[in-house]
Length: 296
Ligand code: NDP
Image (cartoon, rainbow, N blue to C red):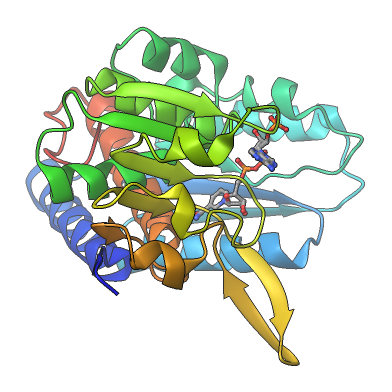
């Protein structure tokens, strides 16, 4: 293996420590406690684990955590009414509705009902537009975490060729936008892209956000490139359950200059960035300077 490992777990711990420092200062100097409200509808086991982790880390950072668990049969009107209340609550600076929502609920309608200033997931259409036009916005947590690791590793990203594989609204598109805002030359690939391997080999920065276990192998990687593996895939190998990324780690690490592992890469950064976004939202709501290094 030649690549250096980008340790997302350690990086996330650093981000959380910065967040905790800011929270302490907000409390001691300004008497403000940042608050994050998380809304979970239904009983999806994976979502329950995410929500539990988010609540735990929110409290550990000194912020207030407000958890709202609603029945799977909750009506759209009731969910919108709760969001209205959270929008109006001055103790709540960030609101996150855990996705996916049960099929009878319109996710776009629900997300767009959140006050954009409290939209710590960065999925509200206003934040998408602000990011797309290079204006100050709330930035989706997973791409923000990837950007932080890339900036830390490279310093300036200006002029680098970036290929983002995946065009989802929550990862691929905002990731591409962030890289473009940092002056990369960006190509977005997807399921219809022709000759994906050779396109990926043009990338100084290769971000895989596909959802296909180990699809990106070493022959997709330009020697010395930085590979960010967003994928989280649960597979069974040799009778054992395993978590793997979208990148085949061994073959890619033999060619890349740097690579994020799965687990321990992008995953831990996502919740750390959620906490960072909540502090940012709190500072903006109170007209205070934003924490440096925790936003795009
Ligand atoms: P989506 O399913 O929404 O999007 C997947 C994208 O991959 C689509 O744009 C799709 O193209 C593209 N794609 C699928 N197959 C191929 C292929 N064979 N070649 C090229 N492109 C392909 O997934 P998400 O963006 O939500 O998530 C991607 C991965 O990231 C998943 O593994 C998910 O679990 C993980 N994830 C991890 C997070 C973290 O915290 N680490 C957070 C969020 C997601 P098309 O549009 O043409 O269908």
